[in-house]
Length: 239
Length: 377
Image 1 (cartoon, chains in turn purple, orange):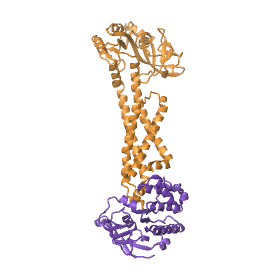
Image 2 (cartoon, rainbow over the protein chains, first blue to last red):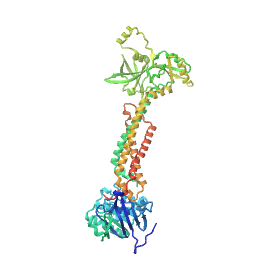
Image 3 (cartoon, rainbow over the protein chains, first blue to last red):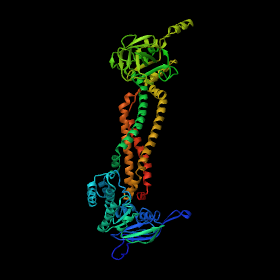
């Protein structure tokens, strides 16, 4: 697997180069992404902005290895994983090890309590049940929802549920965190708290956070903003 | 962490309600199997309890149960003299309806000669017939009790003894009376009809007719050889006990068996479709959760395992509740329901296989879920 050349003092955790993605062919062809290139470095929190249908979610899905690009290169944590074809056969394991997902609606499993929602990811990665639960409680305590560890998601407030979801995303210490509208279901106060938390995590764990958002109340929390329009990058924004 | 168990526990009420519904359906399937087994057992009960070795009937018939058979009453003496025969007895079989205390009773009347083969194997309450006339031994299923007075034909009989679980192939409970009484019940005409017969010059016809003669053999006698000896008399036919049981099973029970077999097959097919639909619906309700599981890195086997385990749990709980239900109420059915362990195990195996196959539909839907479906609203 190709190794990236260092840029300055750091290697980008995410480097997408010339990524294009189209759906359909001929008259029905839709270009969702056209020659998009982005880089996200450790500790950075970046936003993908743009109107509906601009390609934000498509780009997030490509970076999350759940959608095949039509062409381009994708490097994650220094590993070239896509070069006009996937270079890794086990994308599930790649996601489990390197990527944490945070959803618009927390997407916690409703039949598991907060602690087990987090522990599940650890167990999927091979941890035994006991150590997974211990680590899950540590994470919940770190995110200040340890007191709700035995609560089912239906008993949690929106902010609490989103923190548990963040704990789940962080369980395997991924270096890349992809967030799809992470504050859409929260009020402005809780949205600010969640974003501050993501910034803190990015800084402390040397991770990269890429968030799709429409929420202008939290724009000031991003280090960098990529604007997409009709599948193309619309120049670089700033924090 | 067992996701199937945790999901079931989370929706326990709904899961149990689904299981109860499925259990009722599987209970009906079990009941149908039990009813069929009951028909076979009931059809063979009389034949087996009378412990005959050879049945002598009218030539060219498969009597006395599958076809009508009438032979002279003195045939018994001829049969008794055959080599290897230790005892022989003439018997009659007929259905009669009567009323006791305002309740209607439909009975299967067996007439036999006291002290000869053809009577009840055991009297569980009261005593055997002791008098030549007007006494009955009734099966407990008839609803008659010791001391009841029952009018059959133009005579009234007293119930002096009781038997257990003796019913005819049609489900009618058996009563025993002496051969003479049964012959009068079967062949005596009402006075106006008798007068007409006498006027026609046919009044002197004998009523010493039986439906069959039952023969018991010495332990080392060959039943087939004795039957062949009987067949040499051109007006008689004979069959061994095994042949009689085979005829009953084939001729008397066969249509019921096919009817119930077809109905049971349809019920099983309906159960399979319902199980498949339940599992498919359960899976479809969890598509977002399944997409999330895939996205966070759960392998396919975790997701398949969750669906298959839930399908098996549904089948197991449904089957057990259905089996318990039928075991609890089977004695309240008007006809006997016989649940043999091998039948129950066989249905359990079928339900297991149906659950595995049915879960395939849900598994297919789950495996086609795109992890990207977890993203967005």
